[in-house]
Image 1 (cartoon, one colour):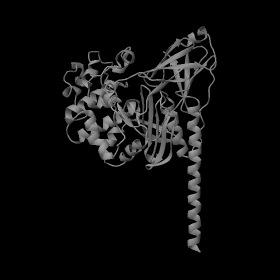
Image 2: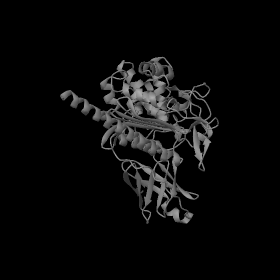
Image 3: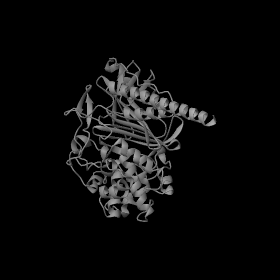
Image 4: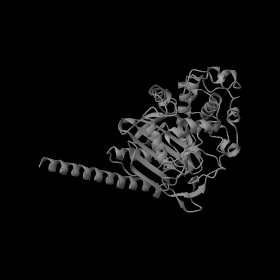
Length: 443
């Protein structure tokens, strides 16, 4: 009799677990589909616990011209998620005694100016070097994005410019710094960045669908990159993949990134001591190639990526052995909201679907008073300018974004799932995003 009750209880538990899984699947599909319907996403998503998918699905087209659907096997460019792989390669070389994090970058790149003597490997990893980022050069994407360059030639684009601050005193996101790290990896290892990545990470972890993207290579299941132009898909501007290099040139799949997440729990790629360094908060909660965050009351280790035609997000919740991945082959900031929502569902939270916001028309003179520079927490600044029939908003170290009017004082950006509410007197605004409300005051 006792064994019968045990069998019944086990059966009920399995049924309940199955029902919960079905519930997550149904909620997750409807949630992601809402972004697709609103023309804010196409790509692949996955949320997994202990390496086992709870929800895994693809949406939209990998190639619009050929009507080829995205699948979980589709390879997407990762953009800045690549930085965590670069950071791991550096830490591996440090473990092997081939470099020190306290070393000056000029030890490996002596062509740098004397002002770089104080710039260390640690500063490059944590975006505290003060070296200007080449991607912020005026007209970079319009004028220079189609020309192949070596890592040294990329660094030379900004090496003659003065440091933006004394190394170690501030934070500013810096793609030049991570290209420099790629250069260091090549100097120290004696291999190309791509070869070292393959030998030291991808082969040991079994990531067969991840690599350094080359435009000319025939790559099975590669997604084309797109952007929305007046509500319709258009090809993204060409970018020679030598340019992002160690700052953003990798491609991968949702399944391979779950393998990556799993490998980070052991010591297959990094020692525990090195992981502690990688995930130690520096300025702006940035570690080495990862950002330390909090979502749904849980500590996270995460990073997003953005590159021509692609946006990506990877969020890890170590305490729950959870990981959420959203890879999109259309430029959209919705990947952050999607990955966050999938995590919330996996944690048993109720997650609201995205709202369809309605744009209204405002006269330029109604929006002109909101122009200015606004200061938030820490060093974050937002520059607001009038651009035709909408506002243009640009945060420190980030590209510009549209803010479309939904009321005389409230503006939105669907891609970022964000809203700005301005004070009527123009003295400040509140940014609503990701369930948080952040205040900004006019400088």
